[in-house]
Image (cartoon, rainbow, N blue to C red; front, side, top):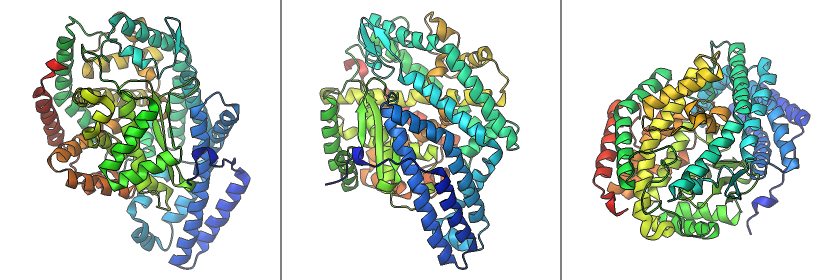
Length: 566
């Protein structure tokens, strides 16, 4: 019988012992007299690093499942304070790796991407920033805890930021407005706290960047995201292409939504409600959804069947929204157990299935590359990782009847619309972060105005309907990535263009598309973003003609669907 997640043993790392062991192994690695001897010590270093990452992830998962658990709150705090020590030792090791007399042979064995990552990492760390890194971790945790403990009262019932979403999709417009106003009222109530946290985050990140010799945080942010084959100029051109080709399509789709709903205007509280007959909703309980997902992955391929049975047998999914649980969804990896973990917050909406397939895409990828000894190659860089997740959403379309029954086609139509209309929001979040970190002196009021300007540019349909918090430009404060993972958002937009290519290819030739997808997953992080794109037989999303072609194909496909029956 496979070991269950609940039995995975957590032991807080003894940092003095960890540092001592790491240094001893690094000394031996540096003194090795042969290539094979260095490889042997490298293996031992990897085992030590994976053990630390295992404990970090166990603490992170268990804290996010229940932020009220005092033990794991303390353990999470421990890693906030001590993970910079891990970074310091890792940085020392990267220097030894790059200076190795056997570097050429090591590159042949492990690939050049490891050395690219090492070189970028060395530019992002120095002992001088250790205390700043601790502060950065603590501030991000503080923001997440505020959201995790949200208590939202609607008509005498209490909701959190995850399960209130179901009310925001209600067919009753009054309920939609009341629930949306309640949610934004929570953000308005905590506005000063969140703005202070973000002020402090911008300040500490700017300070880190300047200590490392950068003018501001932006260039450092790109290096932290391990972006080795594209730059700010390429991203700016991508955003411009989105404005040119995708924003008009999104605007037309919102006009069609307004027509379907028979409304004169779409307000902010209408945007999540797509059809007069109601949004598609999964028909089963959370347990039944997991059973249906198992059937889906059994039929999709032998690889996905093995993967998902491993997840179910190991209790490696926590999917139901509950009090004290962190918001959102994620997938992480527990190296010593070779185990992905899927975290989400089911709330009875179609988002439950989107998140499940999205995070399962991440989990399938890391399961496929779990046997690499290198922590660096377990995952690819962030934008490449999102190709796996977003493409999995499309590869599973043929099984949506398991979850939506007669509404499966309605779901597919709605999901394609959601995927294309997301992209302008994704680039708005990205440009906002460029503005903020290129101008760290901006006040909260000026930042909020910058967001309002970006809404007009990329999201012209957004109607605040008199909501004071939204009219003041506070919408961006809901986006956890802005606080926790700066510059992690353009990744979704880039990956979506790649995922649309997989979707188009899957319709034409499932076997070939799926084979390329599996090979992409098995490659893990062994190549850069554009290297993985090429490996998968995809075209670069930075090529304007590719983005234009994808936009036109999606536009034509959606225009050919009669949505009057939905």
